[in-house]
Image (cartoon, rainbow, N blue to C red):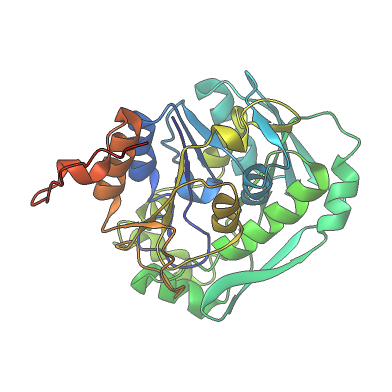
Length: 335
């Protein structure tokens, strides 16, 4: 049984909309399914990533292509990871890669970009998005090199007031939207697994913002508060991230997709076209307001979603394990 788990980035989902706070959901589903195919936003928690071994870490646009049947996914034994940074490379980046080498065993190399990558976060219709400058030059620089997966470790410009408000009051993660856009642009151009990890760029001169992480924050933001470099989650995810391929795991192997209710995008559309059951979780509220679709399965929470998946795996019609239930007597149909 293979399950796709998505929590779209930048929509302020109660679970999975902050800093890897959908890791527990992913772990539960991974205990039910043979494979869980998910995207970085679900499990990236700065210096933490708790994805189990049977989870496939797939960048969002490549996940969309996979669900449309445009490519398959083939998981390697290991990827060679290229880590690109704006010059000059910082010691914390080097230490993060070294730490991943000695704990995960990653094969990674760091290079400086000839032209800095600039990412500016902003909001549009209450959703996180942003603008990216210099990504084409990044693609041109790394295209001739030999590697299997790309980690981008660069700063994201966020308004000081927006950052303070998020850390103290929560809401939509302002960094996630522009990260997803940058990863999509680069991954589409290179056709390789790609993920972005933000580089801390707050000046120590701004004491209030610089020391915000010493305060007690929302538990869903806490992984950021206890992290130093934010890169480790991406290195773990990319180490064995599946590569787009002409053969391997295909959309025909997918048995269900789970998503927050209220949102609708390319993955949902692709699942409808492929007749893949879509389970929508009502409790995972977000800023989207899509009306209910009669072709989707709506559940109250992720506990119930896990129960639906367990029934599917067991070959049990889910309605028959609920009470009260009205049993009907089947009338034979004559030929």
